[in-house]
Length: 99
Ligand SMILES: [Zn+2]
Image (cartoon, rainbow, N blue to C red; front, top):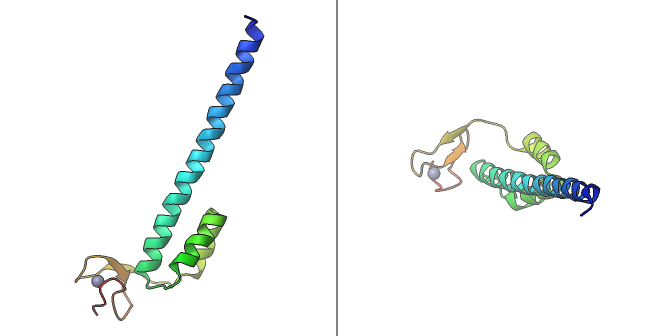
């Protein structure tokens, strides 16, 4: 066996593993971002959370930045009735509808 071919194959294989890791990391990151945006949008009582998930899905970090800039501002607090997160200032809980 030619030693140079073997090392080339090793480099190629290493590069492949590296690229696959990046793709998997990017995929995991988008899932995490999607879950975060879905939960956050729901907690803030936004009806268009699906639209925001699409934005984040296609634009990733950029989409997250746009979302963070345009979501309703305010602190999230735990709802006393259902224990989910909700905007402190909101009149009713988006999860259970309690005041
Ligand atoms: Zn609630």
